[in-house]
Image (cartoon, rainbow, N blue to C red; front, side, top):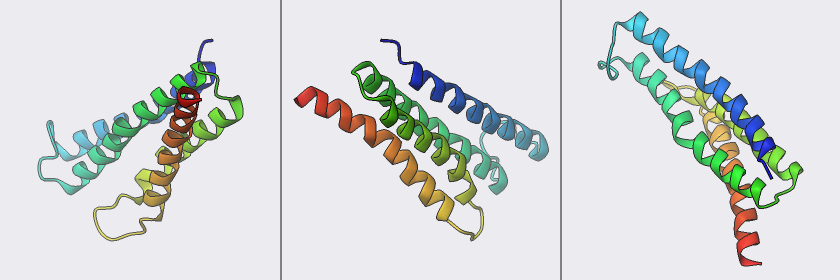
Length: 129
């Protein structure tokens, strides 16, 4: 069975990823930093927002795809995929250079962890059953 539900969420995640990539590129142009963060806190923030997406989204999508191929129901996959999209969209709002609300960061992290744990639990249940 083709993982069509996961593919849908992968496509949406790719759009978010491209948006974050474009933001990093724009910040590079604005700050004249070609490589790394150049000691610029604004550049560092843009890089880390993008980096968090790069670190978590592929793993969540991998777990979703494997679970879908093993037969995880569509409702669980949609819950996982929605948690991933929402989590990755709101997480950057909680990353700040100075003090600010970390609620979006925490909520985004928890949603992303749920997106990983749901298919992980399904895979382990299938493997151990």
